[in-house]
Image (cartoon, rainbow, N blue to C red; front, side, top):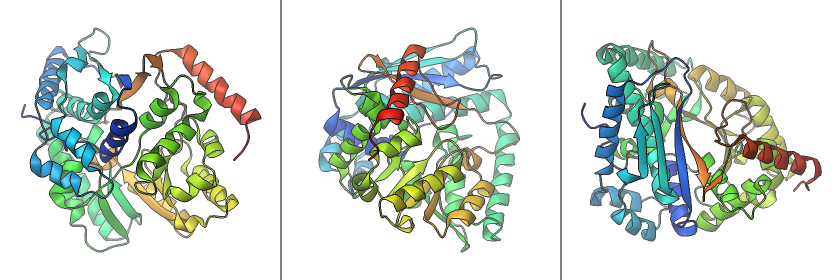
Length: 402
């Protein structure tokens, strides 16, 4: 196979926004990341695993080019000190342990500084995904089916069958291939005038190539590591520590808060007037999106904030039909935006992979996510998950509401 990841810019934008904050505030933190395939019927052959190893090794040989760093340097919130760091940064293949096992076929773990390991997640998932589909199926058949479906979607958008206001492409980690995502972003960039507006992509490399906005702020790892990586902290206050650190780094810039790391209800205990004012909006990633939206609108109203000035960004397993229903319901109540992933970057007649690579240890201790929907948790230690749940429960029953 040709090299899959050809540039260190080929990563999600939030890896750079978190990366800068990690560099300035938590450069000594160490993390462990663990790969998991949630599809029960998927098996990775030895041949696939060897190719995944080779592709990750090729990725680790990449370095930032001067013109790539200049592109990043022109982004408003990126600081010169972080650019200087990226000039020297290089992925470390020695951080990885990649093995073939008899049950699922593939095990990947990455250990090292948070500065390094955070950057690995998305490229590794993109590599695993593309290797699997090219080895398991007739790729030429898949890519033709993909192009047909993408064309049908774009035609439907241009006929205003879908009305989704502002949307971005978020599909790097689970894309069919680099070719498929490139076709999607290039095609959407040329979307004719309609009731839907293509804003950009999470893939910084393609954002630069097609002169669209690179989109992304924070991921669950930020709340998990900042909130739970210092073991003097009560993990039920993870959001407070994470949001406070974000404001320290960015002030009013780059501000979309992720709500569901330890449940949105617990998040709202810390998302008081100051944070609600400083952050331009919030992102939904689990649970019922309509219930979540009205919960956020009511929260803003309680603090005397006009919800129409705030953005609700939806990013959980979306397609254009779901996004249209959300936009029709909420467009007069807030700013509505969508981050749409697999539906754009890997829609064929074959079921996509549901693969993740999550941080499981920070500073040698367990960390975990307790989302608004079951099935998204990933932690090696069930006792820690129980402790985190009990901490959240106690705070919700006894803690002060901000």
